[in-house]
Length: 278
Image 1: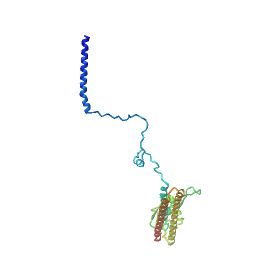
Image 2: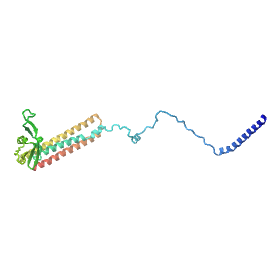
Image 3: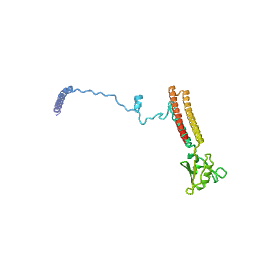
Image 4: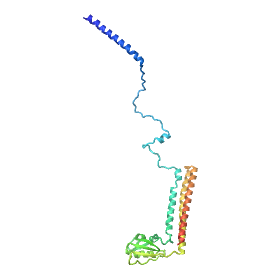
């Protein structure tokens, strides 16, 4: 029985070997017709915790690659050159001189006597116990009454009846030659103050006051120029600003100062013409 099975196994193995050989012979030409392209494997990727090295950005890339998280360095700082060209302080001082000038001239529009502020600035002594130690309190007339101009008359409106007498006394004692009238029955709290017509003397005094106001304004402008020029001189000694920039800044300063003096002259000349025509 063993002898019979052995040849069968041999026959089976031989048949399988022949079949495998035939199959290989059939598949081999296909491999030649479609050769396989060998796969190229790149370098193996490894995991690491080190930061990625990036290329350093140039000036152009830095300007174009700004983000919201990029801090802005020295955003509000200014250089010495910027301060040399900055004339804001000088211009503000000149503007302040103009305001003071126009305020003084407004009190001279009618010989210095028609402006309500002249009367409102008078001191009035009230008959109550006060701060001066003599049984009276000194207040400003404009704090207890209102001055309303009407033509060549000033109407002084008092808030209380007890203020009529001290207000009238203060107006009569002023150096402006004013004579207050007794209040009428229909308006018991109103004091009428007729204004004398301007004379040649009052006109000349007003014109002289206008000239004095112009001189004061010119002095303020000259002082402002001196302060700015000292700043430029400091930059020159410290050598923090180029000579060309200092020269240009000085030229601009002179132009602003010259314009300020011209404006003072224009304003005062117009005021003098009005005062002379009264």
